[in-house]
Length: 147
Image (cartoon, rainbow, N blue to C red; front, top):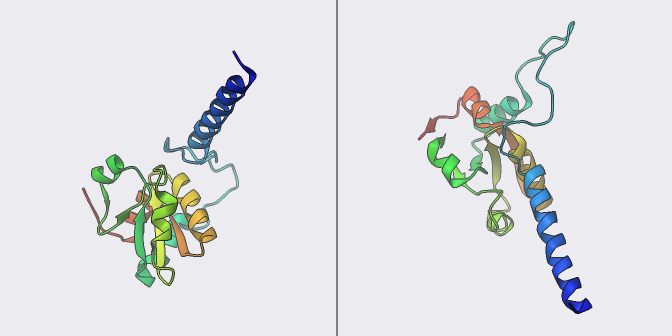
């Protein structure tokens, strides 16, 4: 096999491996966020989860809601009038580029992992966005949901 063809195949393999690694780490939808949810002895809860606080603030500010889960997850249940922009989709960056730069947004997902990643990318794009955390956080804050 010629060296050029070998390098080309190696480059394709590395790109595929990088993409797979990125999908498995930054866009995890398995519900685990890597943090322990057990409170140790002598530790008290200090109020609502950060996602609930952001979701409550977003409700008070009447922000546009963006669901960053997959279409299948969205169909199973979502915040009423939420716009679907799948962070795992290939068009995520293009879709957020089309959002009103003067708008105010709140994002959520199933566990809070993808919403955190989406909020960071949207903030980097110059948007005013809050991380609403998980769908459960949005419901706890008072956002109505539908299937």
